[in-house]
Length: 153
Image (cartoon, rainbow, N blue to C red):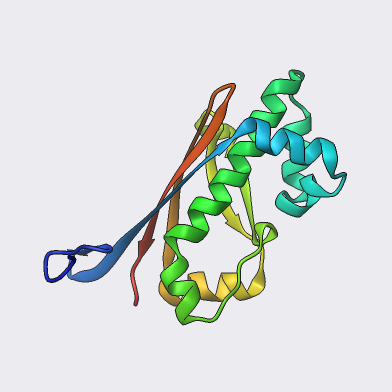
């Protein structure tokens, strides 16, 4: 059983500033996302912003598009898993459209998170949250890993 040795998050102090790191991860079958998109015309717009859809649809390879949609889905799930403790304490119910996953062209299209929901922006500001995101996908699966840096709790 989990007692004194159980670690739910990593507490750390850097330059005298206490901070915590929270992790979230998700993996999804690309076929599951592909089936949802093909069966429901509104599925894309329920998990991705217009900007994300436009960016993904630029890809010429149809299989790659589904992998990228699955990657976005996994990313948002991982973000919400990492921040679930804060969301519960703030009584915030996240939506897939609260954040946007953007590929930074200056860093070889490295993904980063843009918070677009105003209530979520306030939470990020209150807790001084920063997110680091990694997305990977292959033909069958997409996975995402998030490390959330939280300065205030």
